[in-house]
Amino acid sequence: MPANKTTETTKNVLDFIQEFANTEQKKMDSLELVKLMQGISGHKPKMWGPSIIGFGKYHYKYESGHEGEAPLIGFSPRKAAISLYVFTGLEEHEHLLADLGKFKVAKACIYINKLSDIDKKKLVKLMKETIRYIHKKYKTLN
Image 1 (cartoon, rainbow, N blue to C red):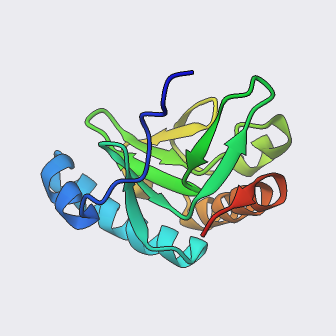
Image 2: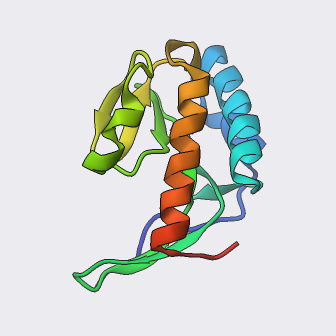
């Protein structure tokens, strides 16, 4: 089985944001997301792979036998949109997306153009439920 590409690295998160976020809006939104996600998760931001900022860590193992580590929650200020890794993708959690605001979703990833497009209170609720679910289902590591 191939090694996971998205693993925790030692790259500096603030340097990454300054280098990678392609607009001032994305830089400001990224800094705000760092504060918000650190506050919700209780974990400092860490880089995962070349472009994901993650908070906390858990170990997963699928029925297929594939396993690895991933952040509890995270985001990436990508060129097209900010990718939010704050959703389980499960049908039982879809109600948490109601009235979130202007976004697109693909499986467990939410895409937004800017942070002001979504309701931050709803985002906080979504992140808390996702973290609660991960703690219940998987072994958290830090």
